Amino acid sequence: MNKRAVLGLMLAIILPLAGYYIVKFYGESATQMPHRYFFDSVVISTNNGKQTIDTIWHQASNISLTNQLGKQVTFDDLKGKILVIDFFFTRCPSICPRMAKAMKRLQNSFINSNDSIVQFISVSIDPEHDSVTQLRNFANRYTSNHDSWWFVTGNKKQIYDFALNEIKASVADVNVDTAFVHTENFFLLDKNRVVRGWYNGLDTIAQARLVRDIPLLMLEKNKKKTFKEFLKELFGRS
Figure 1 (cartoon, helix red, strand yellow):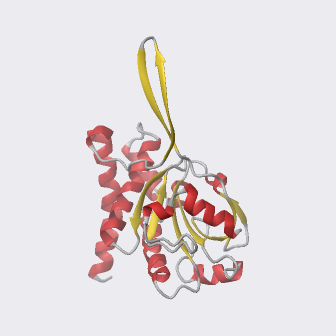
Figure 2 (spheres, helix red, strand yellow):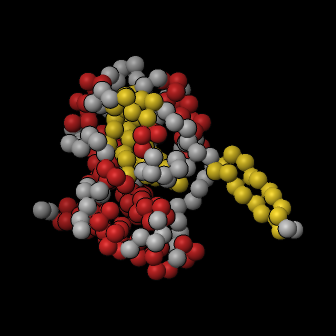
Figure 3 (cartoon, one colour):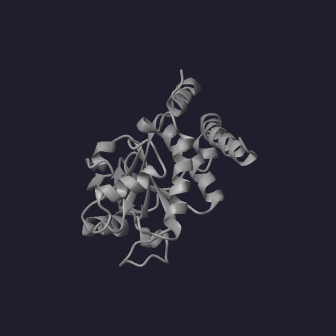
């Protein structure tokens, strides 16, 4: 194993564990949890003379798609999971193969546990061309775990509505052409499908932040989780 591979393996192990310790022992107030970005409304209420302000964060809507195995899937199938989403097309000659390699590294960072913790989703922005066969051929180049990483296609209008209106791809990446959603970003959604960040998939520093932020959201799901339980969930070990 070369030095680069060893370094990547060490980062995949150390960063999630560091995230656990930071949140567990110093508390959410002492660490930088992934922000929530888009809200639908702010509700101001008064109870016994005390005013409270509640932000209603935008929850990305459900969408029905077809994955590389020809299976109809929806985001509602993934309740309780953290989502990492990017957009691609199989004929892309530029950033898509590099994004796929970066997503593969992310998948490998949570290799034994990601089926139950985090779902990786690559959404085709060229559904007229990207058939199930095309998706499967593309997916086979990067992963053998087709359950935890979906390559999906579907109705083009629904896909673009989701990208632009639900997770605000054009806000996260001001260079996005709304007629063709081609972005370098990975989008991180929590278990409630609230956007918690976007990360340049071609930037190793941004990728490292994403590897750190995923376990922070994992711990946010259950702040009473013990270290042993966290390890078991993260690595699939007892």
